[in-house]
Image 1: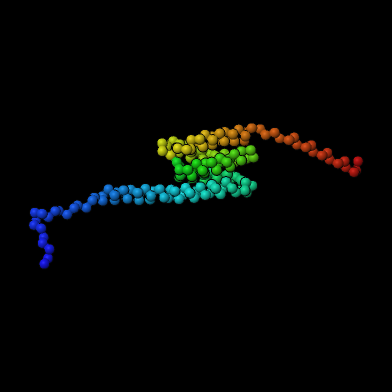
Image 2 (image 1 turned 180 degrees about the vertical axis):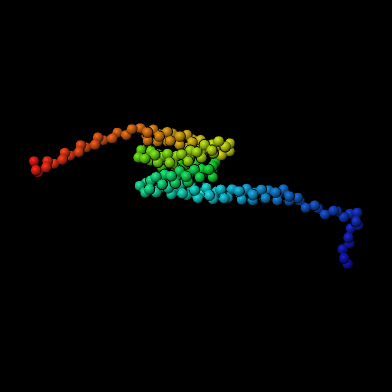
Length: 172
């Protein structure tokens, strides 16, 4: 005998499924954020790897090109990754190289520091991206001022050696 069914007055309505609209919106927002941030992160990490390379390459191999590339790649890494820690890492590595160059080649310090300083000015003007980079901005200003002072100051030059007097001609 089949089980008895309760009378219709005793049937309860089926429970409504919980709304998943909020969850779906949350998933969509996360996917959009990842789609926006992932290319920036990947490009920033690529620029950071170039900064690491230019920071350790031998300084006597094309020093002007090395300084220019280091400045451009560090500025790109800072611009893409700020305020995250890799942006500060790129700034610190570029500062270390600029300090090394300050005594030997002050004009190369300007090649390193100018694009980075411009990017740091832009980043530090932002309310959300400036955290952790203000001290780096001041340090690059000091490095640029020191490099300008060294490149403009007259360098003590050794007096040229006197030219040897011509040998007396044998006809005299």
